[in-house]
Image (cartoon, rainbow, N blue to C red; front, side, top):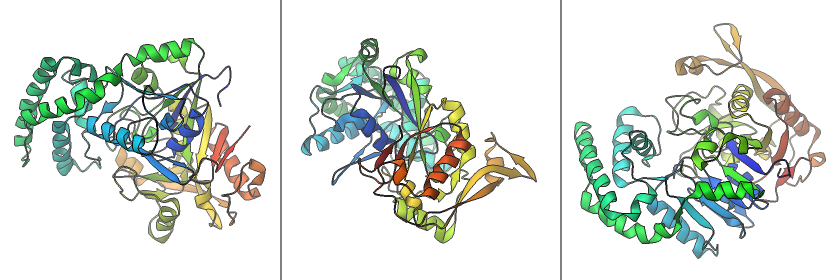
Length: 427
């Protein structure tokens, strides 16, 4: 997708996450000078398959698997230091060279143990379906202007004061919540002393680095986490993540202006999944849903939780296209549908006898809609070896054409398997 008029590209999930963004970013990163992760935290899991090897990345951008690509963890990311250090060590053990290729924004907020204690205590009562990794509490601290940023590690006394104040406040909250475990200040400072030597050499003003790359006309790729329907403003609230997952977040989370973005690629599965609680209008119960889950390997890369599965929902696709300004689509896991003789596609919803074509604000309403399905003919043969559109069966091409019509954006990529080479680029 990179071209002289499209140097700055944002990749976003256009459903409830788990759409296969990691693979698409990995493919695009081959021609990118720099890849930026701009929001979310270690609650995301991007899976990339290279040959016979599988890599699951939680914080490091998927572009790290290309030896000449520089990777940036932007200011919009909430960074769990130990997860990052562990991820770096595993990549280095597997022969991936990181030196000089990975940098962290000095403005990225740190996820500390007291955030995880708060998150788990809150989840026990709220049952939102979080990963329990402290993501919500650290974004609360960020908004409450009491967060600890990567740049604060440069001055230990400052970090100690911030952490000390936060530990006192958190322990008061944990007591009110009836939690068994309290935060310990000394343990937090011991953690700071362990992580500082490893992280500080990577900490810099990444906004300026990205700005200079764009000015120089380099190909710049922005990697989002989760999906549009998990956006804290535009998703299925309150069953959402704690950050803005839509394309507009790339500007804030990477410190660029909106005029820098040339294109937005939305990644959609050929069917629909989500993890955790909240409405999923096209969810398929029973044997068919289980078949989709097993064929698609639909288990969370971060938590291992089974994903709920359903048919493609074009109401969701159109909504994601609108709020992200999608210019192009990447369709993933088309091969998962290879064995179905007939494939339903949701074209609208029915509520109390009335047809609606939008995502309602009220989640009780969304949970009670009836999907209006259009039945499309299946192809019942393998698509795994297809490398161009003409290799696909007629019915599969018709399915993709209908997705384009319903969502309202052209397709640039079709994935028919987990490997890099199992990808059709639509020219």
